Length: 331
Image 1 (spheres, rainbow, N blue to C red):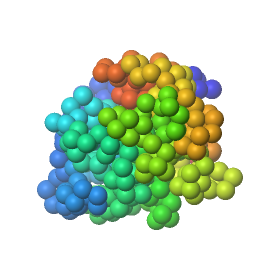
Image 2 (cartoon, helix red, strand yellow):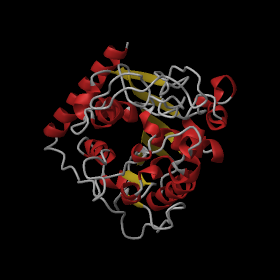
Image 3 (cartoon, rainbow, N blue to C red):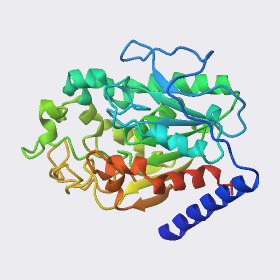
């Protein structure tokens, strides 16, 4: 079923390309690294400085799409995160396939990452949690709706961006404000990097200090943290998100955030949660009630470390599935 659905994505992409050529070609805009004139200045609740992001002025015909990067990433390459910022490339793919740049928005809810480079332990501290960044997303969505005149947004999230979107929706009861969510390899049921096991090298300060007591690990270190139990709800009912249609795109072979296996240049850590309990995190990105696309071999799209967790965001397979899902007609 997964392969059949992916072939449909590929066929749709070909049809869009041929249609654009027949119409004389589509002049795609360039997704930038600034927010447009007249867009409100939003202060980052944790960093106490204006957020970074991208967006553009102009008419809006489609539901605006908001892109949310993962932990320790940025919405576009910055001086302190030059190799990554790949959500901008995903947005550019939509711009190349019919979207206006005025319909594509990105939020940098953790700044330019220079603070992380100065102190690696910031990676797991409170400013990098879901809870700390909900206020930034809340104000950004409101600003995008007001600026574009739209009544809903679509959200494309990678990694922490997935649970951030879900937590904002849960806190605000904002299911009617979100039409569709593309959830790319998100930690919906926790991450493997928070255990007290001596072999969990992510505990080292130089690698982020992902100890069981760090704030990020208190949220995501086990499927049974108070944060995830509340987010996912009793019996998983919180995963359905009401009327929001959800596509999960996840790695099915490896990934340093979920699998106890080598991922590119990164060695594995034990499958143990923050409470010291053996735990299988391999299906953590899955969500009940969501369409599920499981991919393999995504490390080829991470040119620096060769990891699947970072590569899947930069993958043509992911982009094609994203485009297909956002353009599907309601049933």
